[in-house]
Image (cartoon, rainbow, N blue to C red; front, side, top):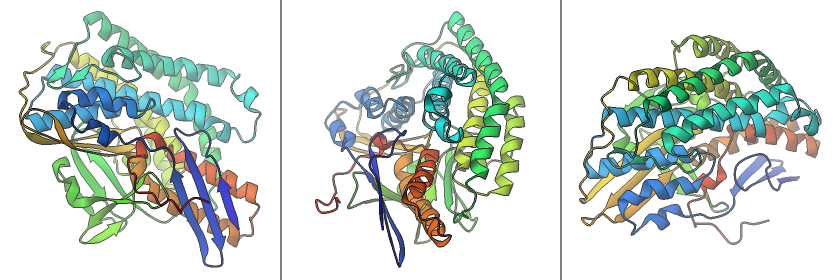
Length: 443
Protein backbone atom coordinates (compact mmCIF):
# COMPACT_ATOMS: atom_id res chain seq x y z
CA UNK A 1 0.00 0.00 0.00
CA UNK A 2 1.32 3.42 -0.98
CA UNK A 3 0.26 6.45 1.02
CA UNK A 4 1.00 9.75 -0.70
CA UNK A 5 0.59 13.21 0.77
CA UNK A 6 1.06 15.71 -2.05
CA UNK A 7 1.59 18.33 -0.76
CA UNK A 8 2.04 18.42 2.98
CA UNK A 9 -0.11 21.39 3.97
CA UNK A 10 0.23 24.08 6.63
CA UNK A 11 4.02 24.05 6.73
CA UNK A 12 6.59 26.43 5.22
CA UNK A 13 7.74 25.32 1.77
CA UNK A 14 6.94 22.42 -0.54
CA UNK A 15 7.11 18.88 0.85
CA UNK A 16 5.70 15.59 -0.39
CA UNK A 17 5.45 12.50 1.83
CA UNK A 18 5.58 8.98 0.39
CA UNK A 19 5.00 5.95 2.61
CA UNK A 20 5.32 2.53 1.00
CA UNK A 21 3.81 -0.08 3.32
CA UNK A 22 4.73 -3.68 2.65
CA UNK A 23 5.41 -6.95 4.47
CA UNK A 24 8.79 -5.69 5.63
CA UNK A 25 7.32 -2.57 7.21
CA UNK A 26 7.02 1.02 6.03
CA UNK A 27 9.50 2.82 3.81
CA UNK A 28 9.25 6.59 4.21
CA UNK A 29 10.47 9.35 1.93
CA UNK A 30 10.06 13.04 2.70
CA UNK A 31 10.77 14.81 -0.56
CA UNK A 32 11.70 18.46 -0.22
CA UNK A 33 10.92 20.26 -3.46
CA UNK A 34 12.24 23.47 -5.01
CA UNK A 35 16.03 23.79 -5.24
CA UNK A 36 17.20 27.21 -3.91
CA UNK A 37 21.00 26.91 -3.76
CA UNK A 38 21.92 29.87 -1.60
CA UNK A 39 25.42 28.57 -0.94
CA UNK A 40 26.19 28.88 -4.65
CA UNK A 41 24.60 32.33 -4.79
CA UNK A 42 27.04 33.51 -2.09
CA UNK A 43 30.20 32.36 -3.91
CA UNK A 44 32.08 35.37 -5.28
CA UNK A 45 30.06 37.91 -3.32
CA UNK A 46 31.73 40.30 -0.86
CA UNK A 47 31.54 38.61 2.53
CA UNK A 48 29.94 41.64 4.20
CA UNK A 49 26.92 41.18 1.90
CA UNK A 50 26.13 37.70 3.21
CA UNK A 51 24.00 38.81 6.22
CA UNK A 52 21.71 40.73 3.85
CA UNK A 53 21.45 37.95 1.26
CA UNK A 54 20.72 34.92 3.43
CA UNK A 55 17.55 36.21 5.15
CA UNK A 56 15.93 35.77 1.72
CA UNK A 57 16.19 32.02 2.23
CA UNK A 58 12.99 32.21 4.27
CA UNK A 59 10.34 34.74 5.27
CA UNK A 60 9.44 32.83 8.43
CA UNK A 61 12.87 32.60 10.10
CA UNK A 62 14.98 35.33 8.40
CA UNK A 63 16.22 36.70 11.73
CA UNK A 64 18.08 33.49 12.57
CA UNK A 65 19.82 33.42 9.17
CA UNK A 66 20.71 37.11 9.52
CA UNK A 67 22.35 36.52 12.92
CA UNK A 68 24.11 33.24 12.13
CA UNK A 69 25.51 34.79 8.97
CA UNK A 70 26.86 37.95 10.59
CA UNK A 71 28.45 35.84 13.34
CA UNK A 72 30.20 33.71 10.70
CA UNK A 73 31.42 36.83 8.88
CA UNK A 74 32.82 38.29 12.11
CA UNK A 75 34.54 35.01 12.96
CA UNK A 76 36.17 35.03 9.52
CA UNK A 77 37.33 38.65 9.92
CA UNK A 78 38.33 38.29 13.58
CA UNK A 79 35.96 40.97 14.88
CA UNK A 80 34.73 41.44 18.45
CA UNK A 81 31.50 43.41 18.66
CA UNK A 82 30.49 45.95 21.34
CA UNK A 83 28.29 44.74 24.16
CA UNK A 84 25.38 47.02 23.28
CA UNK A 85 25.15 45.72 19.72
CA UNK A 86 25.26 42.12 20.96
CA UNK A 87 22.30 42.87 23.22
CA UNK A 88 20.32 44.39 20.36
CA UNK A 89 21.00 41.26 18.33
CA UNK A 90 19.87 39.10 21.24
CA UNK A 91 16.57 40.99 21.46
CA UNK A 92 16.15 40.59 17.70
CA UNK A 93 16.84 36.85 17.91
CA UNK A 94 14.45 36.30 20.82
CA UNK A 95 11.75 38.19 18.95
CA UNK A 96 12.41 36.13 15.83
CA UNK A 97 11.96 32.89 17.76
CA UNK A 98 8.77 34.08 19.45
CA UNK A 99 7.09 35.32 16.26
CA UNK A 100 7.88 32.09 14.41
CA UNK A 101 6.51 29.96 17.27
CA UNK A 102 3.33 32.03 17.34
CA UNK A 103 2.92 31.68 13.58
CA UNK A 104 3.16 27.89 13.86
CA UNK A 105 0.88 27.58 16.90
CA UNK A 106 -1.72 30.08 15.74
CA UNK A 107 -1.92 29.55 12.01
CA UNK A 108 -0.38 26.19 11.04
CA UNK A 109 -1.15 23.85 13.96
CA UNK A 110 -4.26 25.47 15.40
CA UNK A 111 -6.87 23.60 13.29
CA UNK A 112 -5.31 20.29 14.39
CA UNK A 113 -5.61 21.00 18.10
CA UNK A 114 -9.23 22.10 17.71
CA UNK A 115 -10.17 18.48 16.83
CA UNK A 116 -12.17 18.84 13.67
CA UNK A 117 -13.84 22.22 14.21
CA UNK A 118 -14.75 24.07 11.01
CA UNK A 119 -11.82 26.24 10.00
CA UNK A 120 -14.03 29.30 9.50
CA UNK A 121 -15.16 28.94 13.11
CA UNK A 122 -11.64 28.44 14.45
CA UNK A 123 -10.27 31.66 12.98
CA UNK A 124 -13.18 33.79 14.20
CA UNK A 125 -12.84 32.91 17.89
CA UNK A 126 -11.78 35.43 20.53
CA UNK A 127 -8.85 33.15 21.41
CA UNK A 128 -7.48 33.39 17.90
CA UNK A 129 -7.99 37.16 17.73
CA UNK A 130 -5.94 37.53 20.92
CA UNK A 131 -3.27 35.36 19.28
CA UNK A 132 -3.03 37.85 16.42
CA UNK A 133 -2.63 40.77 18.83
CA UNK A 134 0.09 38.85 20.71
CA UNK A 135 2.06 38.21 17.52
CA UNK A 136 1.78 41.88 16.54
CA UNK A 137 3.46 42.78 19.83
CA UNK A 138 6.40 40.52 19.00
CA UNK A 139 6.68 41.69 15.39
CA UNK A 140 6.96 45.29 16.61
CA UNK A 141 9.98 44.28 18.71
CA UNK A 142 11.69 42.71 15.69
CA UNK A 143 10.80 45.73 13.54
CA UNK A 144 12.66 48.04 15.92
CA UNK A 145 15.65 45.83 16.75
CA UNK A 146 16.12 44.41 13.23
CA UNK A 147 15.04 47.31 11.02
CA UNK A 148 12.08 45.23 9.81
CA UNK A 149 10.63 41.88 10.83
CA UNK A 150 10.93 40.22 7.41
CA UNK A 151 14.51 40.15 6.07
CA UNK A 152 16.05 42.32 8.85
CA UNK A 153 19.19 44.32 8.07
CA UNK A 154 20.34 45.95 11.32
CA UNK A 155 23.11 43.42 12.13
CA UNK A 156 26.27 44.25 10.18
CA UNK A 157 29.87 43.03 10.53
CA UNK A 158 31.19 44.67 13.69
CA UNK A 159 27.85 45.33 15.38
CA UNK A 160 24.61 46.99 14.32
CA UNK A 161 23.72 49.88 12.04
CA UNK A 162 21.60 51.53 14.70
CA UNK A 163 21.18 51.19 18.43
CA UNK A 164 17.63 51.76 19.67
CA UNK A 165 16.89 55.15 21.18
CA UNK A 166 15.54 55.40 24.73
CA UNK A 167 11.99 55.74 23.36
CA UNK A 168 12.57 52.66 21.15
CA UNK A 169 13.60 50.65 24.20
CA UNK A 170 10.49 51.83 26.02
CA UNK A 171 8.27 50.76 23.11
CA UNK A 172 9.88 47.30 22.91
CA UNK A 173 9.63 46.83 26.67
CA UNK A 174 5.96 47.81 26.60
CA UNK A 175 5.24 45.43 23.70
CA UNK A 176 7.01 42.58 25.52
CA UNK A 177 5.07 43.22 28.73
CA UNK A 178 1.77 43.46 26.84
CA UNK A 179 2.60 40.28 24.96
CA UNK A 180 3.41 38.46 28.20
CA UNK A 181 0.11 39.62 29.71
CA UNK A 182 -1.87 38.37 26.70
CA UNK A 183 0.02 35.08 26.69
CA UNK A 184 -0.71 34.58 30.40
CA UNK A 185 -4.41 35.03 29.63
CA UNK A 186 -4.26 32.61 26.68
CA UNK A 187 -1.99 30.04 28.28
CA UNK A 188 -4.54 27.95 30.18
CA UNK A 189 -6.78 27.36 27.17
CA UNK A 190 -3.90 26.79 24.79
CA UNK A 191 -2.10 24.37 27.13
CA UNK A 192 -5.34 22.43 27.65
CA UNK A 193 -5.90 22.12 23.90
CA UNK A 194 -2.31 21.12 23.17
CA UNK A 195 -2.19 18.56 25.99
CA UNK A 196 -5.49 17.07 24.79
CA UNK A 197 -4.08 16.93 21.26
CA UNK A 198 -0.97 15.11 22.51
CA UNK A 199 -2.97 12.72 24.70
CA UNK A 200 -5.20 11.69 21.81
CA UNK A 201 -2.09 10.69 19.84
CA UNK A 202 -0.07 8.79 22.44
CA UNK A 203 -0.72 5.27 21.13
CA UNK A 204 2.79 5.15 19.65
CA UNK A 205 6.02 4.85 21.63
CA UNK A 206 8.73 6.63 19.66
CA UNK A 207 12.34 5.52 19.74
CA UNK A 208 14.69 7.62 21.84
CA UNK A 209 16.85 9.92 19.72
CA UNK A 210 19.97 11.95 20.24
CA UNK A 211 19.63 15.72 20.67
CA UNK A 212 21.79 18.73 19.90
CA UNK A 213 21.43 22.21 21.43
CA UNK A 214 23.36 25.41 21.99
CA UNK A 215 24.24 25.96 25.64
CA UNK A 216 25.65 28.94 27.53
CA UNK A 217 25.39 30.44 30.97
CA UNK A 218 21.66 31.11 30.65
CA UNK A 219 18.67 28.80 30.99
CA UNK A 220 18.00 28.71 27.25
CA UNK A 221 20.70 30.02 24.92
CA UNK A 222 19.67 31.27 21.49
CA UNK A 223 22.52 33.56 20.38
CA UNK A 224 25.87 32.21 21.58
CA UNK A 225 27.54 29.31 23.36
CA UNK A 226 28.85 25.79 22.82
CA UNK A 227 27.13 22.88 21.11
CA UNK A 228 25.93 20.13 23.41
CA UNK A 229 25.00 16.68 22.16
CA UNK A 230 23.18 14.13 24.28
CA UNK A 231 23.08 10.84 22.42
CA UNK A 232 20.44 8.13 22.61
CA UNK A 233 22.46 6.39 25.36
CA UNK A 234 22.51 9.59 27.45
CA UNK A 235 26.21 10.23 26.84
CA UNK A 236 27.08 13.93 26.58
CA UNK A 237 29.48 15.74 24.28
CA UNK A 238 30.35 19.47 24.40
CA UNK A 239 32.29 21.29 21.69
CA UNK A 240 32.95 24.74 20.26
CA UNK A 241 30.97 25.71 17.12
CA UNK A 242 34.24 25.87 15.17
CA UNK A 243 34.55 22.07 15.58
CA UNK A 244 31.13 21.17 14.22
CA UNK A 245 32.55 19.31 11.19
CA UNK A 246 34.13 16.75 13.54
CA UNK A 247 30.72 15.69 14.83
CA UNK A 248 28.04 16.72 12.32
CA UNK A 249 27.99 15.20 8.83
CA UNK A 250 25.75 15.82 5.81
CA UNK A 251 24.72 13.32 3.17
CA UNK A 252 22.71 13.94 -0.02
CA UNK A 253 19.36 12.17 -0.40
CA UNK A 254 18.65 10.69 -3.83
CA UNK A 255 14.93 11.57 -3.72
CA UNK A 256 15.03 15.06 -2.21
CA UNK A 257 16.55 18.51 -2.62
CA UNK A 258 17.34 18.42 1.08
CA UNK A 259 20.05 16.40 2.80
CA UNK A 260 20.26 14.07 5.76
CA UNK A 261 22.38 15.22 8.68
CA UNK A 262 23.81 12.94 11.38
CA UNK A 263 25.96 13.27 14.44
CA UNK A 264 28.99 11.01 14.74
CA UNK A 265 30.27 9.92 18.14
CA UNK A 266 33.11 7.39 18.37
CA UNK A 267 32.56 6.47 14.74
CA UNK A 268 28.84 5.78 15.17
CA UNK A 269 26.48 7.76 12.93
CA UNK A 270 23.22 8.69 14.68
CA UNK A 271 19.94 10.40 13.88
CA UNK A 272 19.25 13.37 16.12
CA UNK A 273 16.68 16.04 16.85
CA UNK A 274 17.01 19.80 17.31
CA UNK A 275 14.56 22.53 18.24
CA UNK A 276 12.29 23.49 21.14
CA UNK A 277 11.68 19.92 22.31
CA UNK A 278 15.42 19.25 22.52
CA UNK A 279 16.09 22.62 24.15
CA UNK A 280 13.53 22.10 26.92
CA UNK A 281 14.23 18.38 27.36
CA UNK A 282 17.91 19.07 28.08
CA UNK A 283 17.08 21.96 30.43
CA UNK A 284 16.96 21.67 34.22
CA UNK A 285 14.98 24.76 35.11
CA UNK A 286 13.84 28.21 34.04
CA UNK A 287 14.28 30.83 36.73
CA UNK A 288 12.03 33.49 35.19
CA UNK A 289 8.65 33.79 36.88
CA UNK A 290 6.04 33.19 34.16
CA UNK A 291 7.99 30.88 31.86
CA UNK A 292 9.38 29.07 34.93
CA UNK A 293 5.85 28.18 36.02
CA UNK A 294 4.91 27.15 32.49
CA UNK A 295 8.03 24.97 32.31
CA UNK A 296 6.83 22.97 35.31
CA UNK A 297 3.76 22.03 33.26
CA UNK A 298 6.01 20.97 30.40
CA UNK A 299 8.11 18.72 32.65
CA UNK A 300 4.96 17.06 33.98
CA UNK A 301 3.78 16.24 30.45
CA UNK A 302 7.31 15.20 29.41
CA UNK A 303 7.46 12.69 32.27
CA UNK A 304 4.31 10.99 30.89
CA UNK A 305 5.36 10.93 27.23
CA UNK A 306 9.17 11.28 26.99
CA UNK A 307 10.42 12.61 23.65
CA UNK A 308 6.98 12.38 22.02
CA UNK A 309 7.28 14.62 18.91
CA UNK A 310 3.92 16.30 19.50
CA UNK A 311 5.50 17.81 22.63
CA UNK A 312 7.25 20.25 20.28
CA UNK A 313 3.99 22.23 20.33
CA UNK A 314 3.86 22.69 24.10
CA UNK A 315 7.59 23.49 24.14
CA UNK A 316 6.98 26.38 21.72
CA UNK A 317 4.39 27.89 24.01
CA UNK A 318 6.80 27.87 26.95
CA UNK A 319 9.60 29.34 24.82
CA UNK A 320 7.42 32.27 23.73
CA UNK A 321 6.94 33.20 27.40
CA UNK A 322 10.69 32.82 28.04
CA UNK A 323 11.59 34.98 25.03
CA UNK A 324 9.29 37.79 26.18
CA UNK A 325 10.67 37.73 29.73
CA UNK A 326 14.23 37.60 28.45
CA UNK A 327 13.62 40.53 26.08
CA UNK A 328 12.48 42.64 29.04
CA UNK A 329 15.59 41.65 31.01
CA UNK A 330 17.98 42.44 28.15
CA UNK A 331 16.30 45.78 27.42
CA UNK A 332 16.64 46.82 31.07
CA UNK A 333 20.36 46.08 30.87
CA UNK A 334 20.77 47.70 27.44
CA UNK A 335 19.39 50.96 28.79
CA UNK A 336 22.47 51.28 31.03
CA UNK A 337 25.09 49.97 28.58
CA UNK A 338 27.56 52.30 26.78
CA UNK A 339 26.11 53.14 23.37
CA UNK A 340 28.77 51.83 21.01
CA UNK A 341 27.04 50.43 17.93
CA UNK A 342 29.91 49.04 15.87
CA UNK A 343 33.55 47.96 15.93
CA UNK A 344 35.94 48.59 13.07
CA UNK A 345 36.34 45.73 10.57
CA UNK A 346 39.17 44.96 8.15
CA UNK A 347 38.78 42.69 5.14
CA UNK A 348 41.21 39.80 5.18
CA UNK A 349 41.43 36.14 4.22
CA UNK A 350 39.70 33.97 6.77
CA UNK A 351 37.21 31.31 7.73
CA UNK A 352 34.29 31.70 10.08
CA UNK A 353 31.46 29.68 11.58
CA UNK A 354 28.32 31.16 13.11
CA UNK A 355 25.81 29.05 15.05
CA UNK A 356 22.57 30.23 16.64
CA UNK A 357 19.43 28.53 17.86
CA UNK A 358 16.80 29.26 15.22
CA UNK A 359 13.12 28.70 16.10
CA UNK A 360 13.43 25.15 14.76
CA UNK A 361 16.85 24.38 16.23
CA UNK A 362 20.58 24.68 15.53
CA UNK A 363 21.48 26.77 12.48
CA UNK A 364 25.02 26.73 11.09
CA UNK A 365 26.59 29.19 8.64
CA UNK A 366 30.16 28.51 7.52
CA UNK A 367 32.10 30.80 5.17
CA UNK A 368 35.61 31.20 3.79
CA UNK A 369 36.78 34.36 2.09
CA UNK A 370 39.80 35.40 0.06
CA UNK A 371 42.17 38.24 0.85
CA UNK A 372 40.03 40.65 -1.18
CA UNK A 373 37.00 39.73 0.91
CA UNK A 374 35.13 37.57 -1.60
CA UNK A 375 33.36 34.41 -0.43
CA UNK A 376 35.09 31.27 -1.74
CA UNK A 377 33.12 28.69 0.28
CA UNK A 378 29.70 28.71 1.90
CA UNK A 379 27.84 25.98 3.74
CA UNK A 380 24.50 26.35 5.52
CA UNK A 381 23.04 23.56 7.65
CA UNK A 382 19.50 24.26 8.78
CA UNK A 383 17.43 22.78 11.64
CA UNK A 384 14.91 21.19 9.29
CA UNK A 385 17.74 19.43 7.46
CA UNK A 386 18.93 18.06 10.81
CA UNK A 387 15.41 16.88 11.66
CA UNK A 388 14.51 15.20 8.34
CA UNK A 389 15.93 11.78 9.25
CA UNK A 390 14.25 11.87 12.67
CA UNK A 391 10.93 12.82 11.05
CA UNK A 392 11.16 9.91 8.62
CA UNK A 393 11.95 7.50 11.45
CA UNK A 394 9.05 8.81 13.54
CA UNK A 395 6.65 8.47 10.61
CA UNK A 396 7.85 4.90 10.03
CA UNK A 397 7.23 4.00 13.69
CA UNK A 398 3.83 5.71 13.64
CA UNK A 399 2.60 4.00 10.49
CA UNK A 400 3.86 0.55 11.46
CA UNK A 401 2.12 0.84 14.84
CA UNK A 402 -1.16 1.89 13.18
CA UNK A 403 -0.97 -1.01 10.72
CA UNK A 404 -0.17 -3.46 13.51
CA UNK A 405 -3.29 -2.28 15.33
CA UNK A 406 -5.28 -2.56 12.10
CA UNK A 407 -5.85 1.18 11.96
CA UNK A 408 -5.02 1.01 8.26
CA UNK A 409 -7.53 3.47 6.83
CA UNK A 410 -5.49 5.59 4.40
CA UNK A 411 -7.15 8.88 5.33
CA UNK A 412 -6.60 8.21 9.03
CA UNK A 413 -2.92 7.40 8.41
CA UNK A 414 -2.53 10.62 6.41
CA UNK A 415 -4.11 12.66 9.19
CA UNK A 416 -1.81 11.21 11.83
CA UNK A 417 1.28 11.70 9.64
CA UNK A 418 0.32 15.33 9.04
CA UNK A 419 -0.08 15.90 12.78
CA UNK A 420 3.44 14.60 13.30
CA UNK A 421 5.07 16.58 10.49
CA UNK A 422 3.40 19.84 11.52
CA UNK A 423 4.56 19.33 15.10
CA UNK A 424 8.16 19.43 13.86
CA UNK A 425 7.23 22.69 12.05
CA UNK A 426 9.62 21.99 9.14
CA UNK A 427 10.84 24.93 7.06
CA UNK A 428 11.40 23.29 3.69
CA UNK A 429 12.60 26.45 1.91
CA UNK A 430 15.52 26.52 4.36
CA UNK A 431 16.35 22.87 3.78
CA UNK A 432 16.68 22.75 -0.02
CA UNK A 433 20.38 23.27 -0.62
CA UNK A 434 21.55 20.25 -2.61
CA UNK A 435 21.23 19.35 -6.29
CA UNK A 436 22.16 15.68 -5.80
CA UNK A 437 18.71 14.31 -6.68
CA UNK A 438 18.06 11.23 -8.78
CA UNK A 439 15.93 11.85 -11.90
CA UNK A 440 14.41 8.38 -11.40
CA UNK A 441 13.21 8.88 -7.83
CA UNK A 442 9.86 10.56 -8.61
CA UNK A 443 6.67 8.55 -8.46
